[in-house]
Image (cartoon, rainbow, N blue to C red; front, side, top):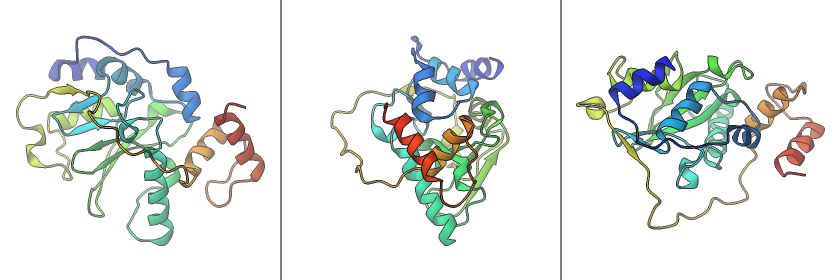
Amino acid sequence: MTGLNDLTRICPPPDQATAIHWDRIEADLGMPLPQDYKELADRYGPGTFNDYLRFFHPHGVTHYVTLTGPAPGRIRAQLRKDYDQDTHPVPYEPDTLFACGATDNGEYLFWITDPATEPDLWHIAVNEARGPGWFTYEGNATAFLVAVLGRQPQVPLFPPSFAEGPAYFTPSRPPLWKPPPFSDAQPVDTGAVRSWARANGYDVPSRGRIPPEIREAWERTTSGE
């Protein structure tokens, strides 16, 4: 809890904590989640830090900011395309990157999910919004927030004004309009399938075609059959 204690000291959380059924969330995702992130999401709920940076939350108010929504899969699919076609440099194997947050400027935050079965060892990577830059923080999500809100380090992809003045958190409010739903015809997030397969004892290659029996088992699990 040390990281969370440090964060609440410099950035007061809402008065009321959020109740989250983490077993269901991890089952939906097909992978475990870092303990620090669970504590962070429980204590702060959905919202933004300094009206700029947010971590996706299981109770996000739209699909675009929900941890279990389609956004992480869509983002990883685009990274896979960039990686395979060498469109933009991606410093990590895309299947190890899980989008866990974003900024109002369009940067994405990722967990580097390596090793896949030890989420408390995952680090944070940030992808530049409209460019090829990447920034890696060798610590967890809560430690990252403590560091960047205190400008230690200062993330070069973020505007200098991001951490000026006292840190504050703004809880999300339901939107007055409903955003259009994601298309159902989105590519399957192969990284999620591989993570689920490894967590359930399947021998799955890190790249290339996923064996059909693994894909079918994953589809049966995620569809609730």
